[in-house]
Length: 203
Length: 203
DNA sequence: ACTTTTGTTAACCATTTGGTTAAACTAATT
DNA sequence: AATTAGTTTAACCAAATGGTTAACAAAAGT
Image (cartoon, rainbow over all chains, first blue to last red; front, side):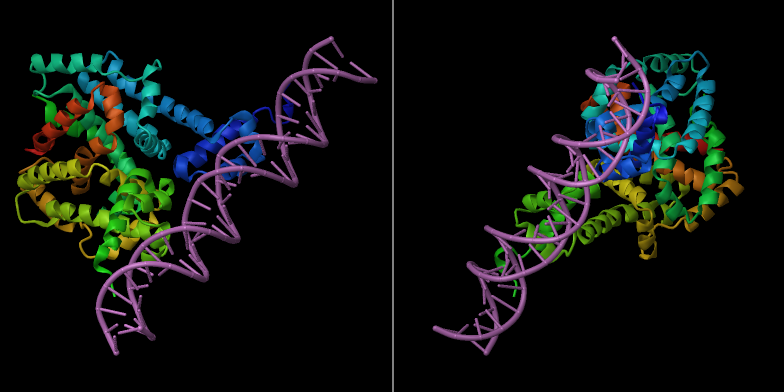
């Protein structure tokens, strides 16, 4: 018997929780701040999500569910390796540009509590390397690309796509570049990264 | 009049604080836990370092001072570009292997409080890209390497060297690899990363 | 109409946490 | 031995924090 007054209180809470947790992390987040941002009383948080931990897990799963399908795109579609690399790097960098807090949040919390990701592994849609591995090994055998371990190639692709966002403040400081210039660099990376990788592995 | 009994209480505290802060971060760390790990009373923490904030800053500066000189090695020494890349990736990966919490700690805390790194920028020894930029541009002009922006190359080098440590639990989960296998991958990366980069940029 | 269920709040509670105080202890100085 | 100054601790404190309770409001069911 929901009051129509604000039928989506639960969503408001989740939205506020996302915003606060992703900026401050589990330890830095305050239930009061989430309540304020959702425009409700603190007790209502516990009415919908029983504890800080459960609210956090809802946020984390939601965030992870945004990132995982994007990963599967590169791992499990039908296109050629080169197309995969081009599409993935471009799409992933575009996607993260719109959600700049996401990768740092997910990685930080996984590091804080590594068992956490094990829960995720059961879920359908969890990324799996098998198809990608076969494809890379195959291309290597056919001498289409230089010898490389699929795992290393995957790590390289992900590193080049994701790290610039996680290390942004550091990179800006070292390179003495402002936000606008950094944005240009990121924009360039949508094509640069794929080219960089393909140059490296092509036979 | 220092008691010789334990002249290095201050160092014990710093050591314990490093351990706790680097594992739990500023928000997750507890002064009591640091005191316990240092084997002293909580009040002594405040006797030597007035507040949690000041103790944290001491730890952060110490951590950053470990990473920065390593960066300068690639940026400002006299060797050829290729040698720089080889030495840096190999040395940096070796170094971080011995301090696996360091990069995540530094990057996480910079993201939590981006103004923080601005304090560091004044310090001597803060990494500076100018020399590296000149060298890369020069190599490009001489057609020794393919055209590439020095900033992008720098980001790539750092991404490929550092990200695997920050994303380790994630990468292990996706690749279905255990700690031992991951250690092998990291070991391989000491040479793989340089080769991957050089393959990509060589003319 | 009235009873039940759901949504919402203000006030409250127990615990944790960073920080303080005053006293005790230690060792060099006089 | 008495003084002095630095070091260490137990006990304490106020604020913050996650969580609960009891009362109230609004729908929905009957």
